[in-house]
Structure formats: C-alpha cells, structure tokens
Amino acid sequence: MKVIYVDNNATTRVAPEVVEEMRPYFGDLYGNPSSMHFFGGQVQGKVEEARERVAKLIGARPEEIIFTSCGTESDNTAIMSSLAANSDKGGVVTTRVEHPAVKNVVANLRRQGYRVIELPVDRDGNLSMEDVAKAITEDTVIVSVMWANNETGVLFPVEEIAALAKSRGVLFHTDAVQAVGKIPIDLAESQIDMLSLSGHKLHAPKGVGALYVRRGTRFAPFIIGGHQEKGRRGGTENVPYIVGLGKACELAYRDLEDQLQRVKGMRDRLEQGLLERIPNSIVNGDRDQRLPNTLNISFEYVEGESILLKLGDKGICASSGSACTSGSLEPSHVLRAMGVPFTAAHGSIRFSLSVYNTQEEIDYILEVTPPIIEGLREISPFWTGEMAKSCTAS
Ligand code: PLP
Image (cartoon, rainbow, N blue to C red; front, top):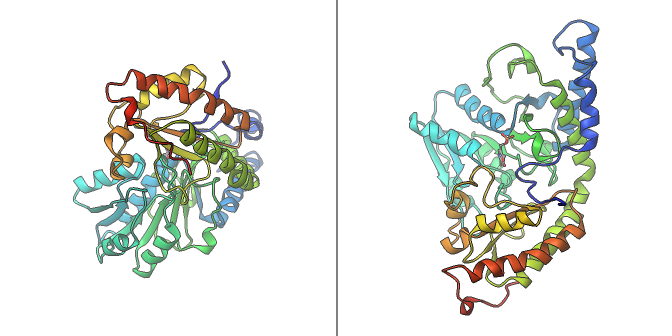
C-alpha cells in the first residue's frame, strides 16, 4: 500500500541529502571534535559548518547556536537556565497551549513554588497582547511563548511579545520547533533572546536540536559536564546528527519559498475541498495567522480515532490532536483552551504537509475522506441527517 504521509508536525522523513551528508561521520570520520589532533579537527570543522547553516536559516550568528539532543531539551534549557541565572525572581509567563516540553516544565516549576501564569487563547487560538502586558510583573524572569502551535499551526506574534518583554527588562523565549523551516525567521531583526528548534521536524533525524541564545544573554547550562559548546552544554557532540541538522537547515533555507507557495497551496486546496465536500466540518485555528503546512479540521459527531483508523486503511497517515496526546480519548488541551465544543473537538484531525507531498496525494485524500466521514456518521449515536448544515467553504 502506498503511504500518504501527512503527519509532518509529528515528525518528518529524513531528506536523502541529509542521510548522505551524515554517512561519513558514522564511518571513517569518527573523531571527537574536542580532540587536539587533526582527526578531531576535521570533525570539529564540520560541526562548525553545521552551526553556520543553522544560524543562517534563522538569521542568527553561529556562536549563538548551542546544539542539544532535541526540542524538549532546548525548551527545558531555556526556561531552567533563565531561572538559574536570575535567581532573585521567580515568575514565568507562558500560554495554555504550549507543547508538553514547556507545559510540563512550568507545571513542575509551579509545584516548586515558582509563580507561573498561563495565558488563555480565544476561539481562534489567538493571544491577547493586553493579557501579555498585564501578566508581566516585577517578578517575571521569562516569558515563553511558542511561535507556531503544533496542533493547529496558529502563529503567535512572538516578535511583538519579545519587544514588549524587552521593554520591561524580561527575557523572552520561543519554542519555534514547528516554525523553523516553514516560515521566514530573522532573529537579527527581532528582540527574541532564546529560540528552540528540533531536527526531526525539518527533515533531519530525531534526537538532535538546537537552542539559540542571543549574544549577551545571561545563561547557566542545564546539562552540566565538559567544556563542549563553549561550556554551555556538556556532553560529547552527536556529530553525525549535528551534521544532518546543518544540512537539513541548508535545504530548508532553499525550500522556504516552496513551503510558502506550493505547500500552502496544497494545504489550502485540501482545506477548501474538505469543507466543500463534508457538511459540519470546521477549521480549528486562525486561518490567516497559520503555518503554511497545517490544517486542523473537525468533523462533528465522529470520533477522531475512528477517522484515523479508516484513513490508515487507505494508507493515509494523519493525526488527531498532537502525537503526544493521541492514545488518550480526552480532547487535546489546545482545543479545550480554544473552547472548541466537545462534539467537534473529538472529531478533530490534523493534516500536516511537507515539501514531499504532491497534488495527486491531495486529490486522493479528497476522494477517500468524505465517504469515511459519511460512513462513520451513519453509525454514530450522535448524528442525525437533519443536523447537516450547509457546507461551510469560503
Ligand atoms: N515543541 C513543539 C511545538 C513540538 O511540536 C515538539 C514536538 O512535537 C517539541 C517541542 C519537542 O521536540 P522534540 O520531539 O525534538 O523533543
């Protein structure tokens, strides 16, 4: 069966060019970048090239990039480091819709006595700048707000929030794991102090990430050990994966226009097509302020898990809620925070595309999905034909 992979916010295929670039570093080039001899030096040079490639994609300086093991480590490091480096205060401001890599860190901090404010979002998943301004106090150390939501693709105005935080003398971190490589990012033009990214969301392997830390930011390492990464993150560097991340960032830089045009075009066609063909379907999240690749759509009165199984029978890999929450029948914390009604939240499906998807695949999804929803509604105890609203496409 042909696999139609539209779950790229969960993880992405490793680009063949990335695999090729990594290969020598599993073989003959196995030196330790910290070694003084030429054999280590060769490897060190490649790690530095990767650092330059990551920096270029986000408009940073290479020395502002710290390699980590994943997006989760980057998020943990940003928050814990800022608290350790500013121990006279204890306030953290974040949102209700963060990924567990931030959400569960701040929950833990709250249990330890830190003062955490989680900002609400509206029905479209947007934040209020007024709420952000009110939440920042004398006690606040860090504001951590994700750039793009992994479930809905909704983009937060992080540059505006960073400027506000700076004007109040507060650090600003953004979890940009879903944003990097999908939208243009130029940190040189922003006031963002720290930014997290993850390799496996942009066609590098799982298990490598990076944290951007603006030059001059007070920083305390989270992983304490050797002098690697200029003493900012202990542990011998995962050289092949770092090389892979560098290559993936180079490709993402090259493909950015394709994301913004072709991938967005496919996503829009999928969205419009599903809305036209399936009554009682609702797009979750602001349709303008959104990643180009993500569509979160609810089919009322059906169960997301059942839809996923049926789509899976047809070779289509999508997601209900985020990968981390699937397996539980609770509607996701993101849709709950947005106030999506129960009947819709349960039938929500996330399609997330990549540059590897094709128009033919979109045609196929549009062909097979409507009969799946119709069939499931026929056996749904909550659905009667009279409920059908006219199609909501616009
Ligand atoms: N932040 C966001 C927004 C994510 O979507 C993810 C992964 O799904 C992470 C953080 C965690 O990244 P990683 O899987 O590299 O730890």
